[in-house]
Image (cartoon, rainbow, N blue to C red; front, side, top):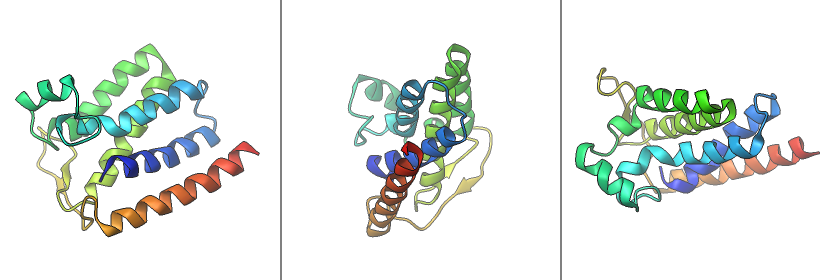
Length: 152
């Protein structure tokens, strides 16, 4: 999936968490939610998050959709954020998890437990394709609807 679809879906997840009062500091929560939603692609030089120095470093020791697309890695990093602040940890984890869920529906798929497991999950959505564009607009529509319900 591409960056905008990850953001739209993570925003949907974030709004649900916010609605059910899982969030105290909504600014930190949503900031780290969006960071978490894009972070797994830090090892892809063509991604929004991959166009920086950190990406050049990570591509030396990791291929795309390996360690940075691992639930184990995401949970560990989220826990470190959680120690600092509950909302940053929860936001990062939900964003990271939303990214993995969407990428599991792509033809490339992911391995949730890399490097310890070989459970590869693949779907039928082509990254950047028509179906992904449709999903993006569905997520934005739901986001808009939920945002107005929550804010009134």
